[in-house]
Length: 164
Image 1 (tube, helix red, strand yellow):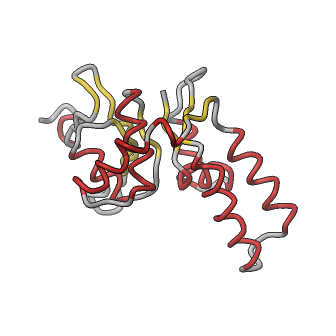
Image 2 (tube, rainbow, N blue to C red; image 1 turned 180 degrees about the horizontal axis):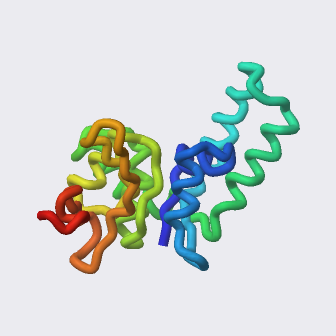
């Protein structure tokens, strides 16, 4: 199961390099879930693209439809807000991000996000997420950290190459 946040949805529909990576890391038939917050965030983001002259209103409207169309099931914020609020305070992180964090934890899903702070927080708390390892200069790897040993088990590059 994928938990899709707005940043990842935008990358996918814009067809960026990272968007293509997210698509390749999605298993065939895998369910994609998100928080209904995604509707407002996607609209807000593409409104900014139109105001900046990056795309037309029609192009942005198509992107909005494609982004929300990526999601198989939306979970209402009202089902998550007490936990998102408490985690926001406990972890000193944006309550908006905590909705996706909580949904990933509750579903044991893999979090797709571009937010580096959220990725770090997810990894620190044992959640599965997509992570780009840039520890070796000019050789980034994008990996989906989800293993039989449990969500969030991070492997070093040496372990993945069989040298560790």
